[in-house]
Length: 421
Image 1 (cartoon, rainbow, N blue to C red):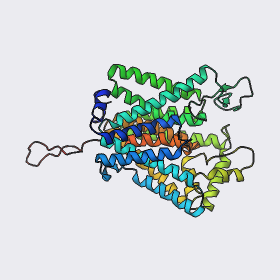
Image 2 (image 1 turned 120 degrees about the vertical axis):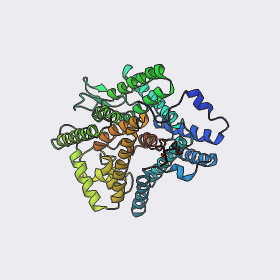
Image 3 (image 1 turned 30 degrees about the vertical axis):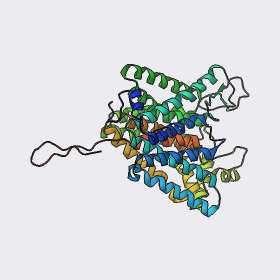
Image 4 (image 1 turned 180 degrees about the vertical axis):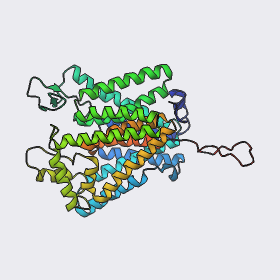
């Protein structure tokens, strides 16, 4: 599949195009650093430093000459509605300020990444190469954990259920990579593997690009399997189906794939209602809906977990409502729910349009986002800032495509005029 004017002849040539553009260099370096922070996880020690660097990157883009309208994207309404919803929930409840600041910083990173990709023609491929590097780091460490039987604190007896503790002889270690939890590693791999593999093929030519992409895909898939994450394995299947559908995006294929996904979701919810060994999701959803009814403007970002702990008996502790859209509804009210749904609809339209242009990176981003969406039906991994960074990295790649409109043919039959992008 060919990309639409966003591929690069060679990586050295792309990097050499930065000569004499110091402000753009600063923005690119900061963007790649933030992408790698997805798996490096260093800002747990110095959170203000990360925010400062992102602000510096945005300032560098403006000094480079990027105009404000060049930051616009099809999902702006969802981004700013979610920020406003978080602010309103904080003002009403006086809680959730730290999580709100973290979310605002991630939103600014999204615009930094979009700006870099709009200002620099090879930017989409280079940002995606940053995603490939992130996959190699965390997936490589995950495989090492499995090979050397390194204790991660997480075990599972069978993928369909069973003991999650490490007190039995028949349990296997669940790898975590550079993350603290296998259920955080899995969604990051689902998001970043597709764009990373496509970027390697674009940057390193037909022969070496295929070899490197296959190697990264095998490494990432192995790490994903070793997480023993049920949601991760299901999402990998959805990712593959989405990739096949988007590669040939006819109306019949898209509708058929959508119906298949909808049927799969119904089956998944059916197993949930049957209590098929996937945890106390029923209680979580019931109490979350009650909280949403009682607090129409939300509880504040990050506060659904403590409220659920008070309402659901037992020793298990919850960090969120185990569903991305439901968590936003509980924590930020109807405005946050609108933002989450609008983001879903807007990015779906962007991906379908990009697939019809045969944009390989958009297809890759859409495949990863489809898999992540399935995970987010029964979990909310994006509550973690680093998973959120991975999510918004992929979103920025999807919405930053630079393409030309079709040439305009004059009525007198003269040569068509080329419009600027």
